Length: 366
Image (tube, rainbow, N blue to C red; front, side, top):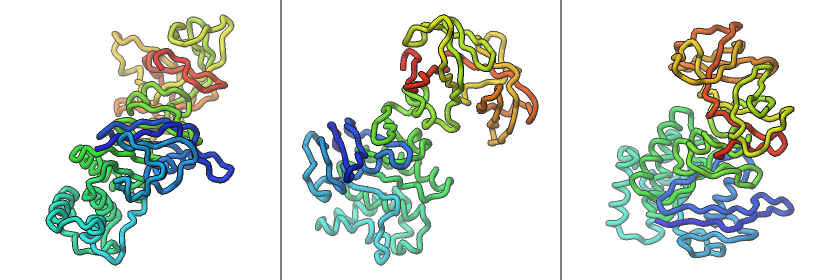
């Protein structure tokens, strides 16, 4: 196991700066996920740690040792790629143990590690097959088996599930989590899929345009986003962000006034109000018809149902409030149909207020 640290890391490609002062620490045995849209710098960050790209400025440490000039093969890192990177002319067994044979490991060590990895990944019956004879999920398991037998200090995952269908992605998320529980290897995982980030990471790092926007536990990011970008990127569906006016004792949303404690925001509120962005997650809405009288909730009245999307246990409601659109995820008890209106209740303590210009969260505790 190893710790990893990025200290004031910057990266330029020609005249284009793609990473801006990255400071990040990964503790021993921690599973950290880098998440963000395409071009945000997450894969570049991974490649710098692997030694596949050179650092422009700053330092990267593995176990408190600077590795900037260390060749990739000397960093004791195992990497799982998006495209599997298997040798097509070698069978499964040969692909898994290739690195060990190059390192001239003993036959006994190779056999023991191959047996353990193939059992864990359920590859025992596939060891003689070539990659062309395998499904996408099986190929990815082989790629992970090759990483496991290396007994590396750090595992790196570069969007390993992006080529798989939804069912296989779910299965492989389970496998990756199980492998981490078994080996407790320090891991850095790159993805653009926030579901992978939320389900796999001990800690999630949200990136945008080469900057770290926020890093925290998955639930802290979900409940306490620092800005509108994080609020929108984390959570499926994303947070509702609505135009509103904040006053000292209430917030006004499409001519509806809702009580709001002025002490919940970090700045003084002018008596004539201030234009803000109001955020509430679709999961936090409840149908007023199914709320007990003892619950102290805020209500949005006469919200028009536009489109209803059945999702099995619950439904996703696409709604209109005045000129604005919002979403609510409600359970099967809600029978409102398209074209009808509904009253939605929510806990105002779970709502957020964002500054229009900076897009930062103004709510206290963030």
